[in-house]
Length: 402
Image 1: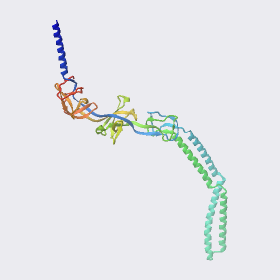
Image 2: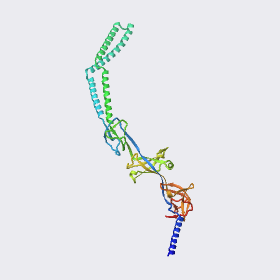
Image 3: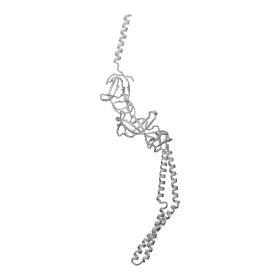
Image 4: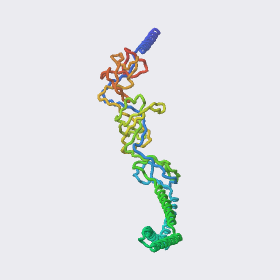
């Protein structure tokens, strides 16, 4: 029995040793995949920020307190609709005072036109005009008589009579001027008219202030930014909000410098927003960047894209995800990106041939987020080795698990 037990123990030890030896020398297990034909869409995946395509800022037209707010953030407004109202009580008091002055001054002007002084002034002016005309004619007659008397064609008496009449006309004109000086002068009326103009200017200014108290929408669109609130005191030019037409928006897409060479105007763009999972917006590349700028630790170009937003869910300043479709290849032979390796300055894959793997150099085409197009170096149905923790070499024995 002791001999039998010893032999059994030796057999077990030998079996264990053989198993360990076999395990140590067994080929490593590897997972494999095969290339497949498919429609491959090459995209540049990055992020961006939404901006309004057409917008206008709303600013305070004057210093005042906001007494009424008629709009909410996100509300649709029409051009010219009232958004808010400023306190106009002081302007209304100024308007009432100016209108009272206007009425008072107009009453004074009416008295001027109806008063005897004004009527007499007009009569005196008319009489003076007639006397001046008569005197001008008489002075021409005197000059003529003087020539005739020198030629003895007229008598000195006739000349003297004409001179006496001229003196009389001069005396009458002087008397009219003295009388007019005692009455209301035109400059007095001008002073009153100046007061009227001053009051009218004050009234117009007050009306303008009252009109500016109603803050109206400069364009039709969405009030996507609203900084104003009731009771706030604002000064001229302070921003109150922004209105934009959001049926179409512009998205500034940040593309890393190495990928900019693949981007062209007119390429299709898909926008997603984490806040609305499953929702997509479509558009195109409108304009390429003119410079590279720093964005945190990245060096990017700002690619301008036009995006259709018919439901107006994309709001300005929203941070979004963007995919620019740079290329589309129909019936492309593709492999997963993780299969590709870099060995000895060559790009290739390990292909399973029987129970050994062989290094195969490949020529790449376009790439999507997860897959690569193989233009040369592979055929359909070939088995490719997926990454493993083991170091693989050309000609190594392996055991495929799939």
